[in-house]
Image (cartoon, rainbow, N blue to C red; front, side, top):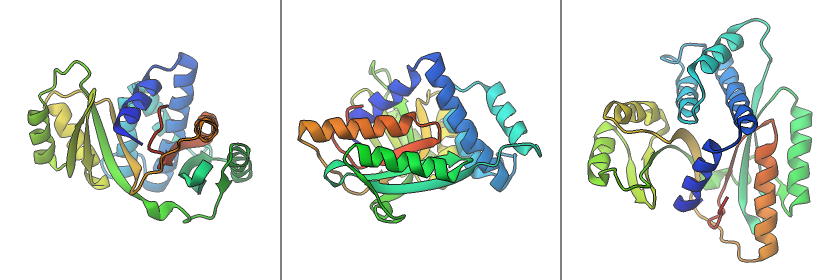
Length: 244
């Protein structure tokens, strides 16, 4: 996804209505429940949970909600969610990875396959596009007013352990190794920077550009329906001209 579109997408998430934000919080809660089941409720020893807490806070999830999810997931009566990845192709061969958190594998697989079929794509086997993506920690700091000293931010980020830095229109993007995301984000917060987004994501090695109106419409609809599904946590793709 292009930098401009990524920042628009982050703002879009933050500006959703209360009902839509509630859905986002619920999705993150499911991911946290899976992380707690796998690695325990202590974020100091559970790096995946720690990263999800960081992501939740960057999307303005209240601390009480986070604590409640962790406590519930630690109980014996918690819902048994599992994390599943689906891979496939959108219109004109756009590579798509869908990360789902579900308590009903059949329901989720059926829904995801339906979206691909309906909007000009096809669901493939696991691994068919995964090789085109790599895991990367991504931190975004807003700079729409130009108040952030980009050189100072870059220096602080690299000193904290970041692997790359880019100043885009309206924001700065900092890349880290997945294991270093939390450390770098915390160092930047301690230095006084406000983080707009912080998460481990799948970054494509190559991008596809769509030019046809029908292809663009179908790709937008595919992403929209996938992201709106209650079981879908994240959608990753290599469409360059995405302007969500």
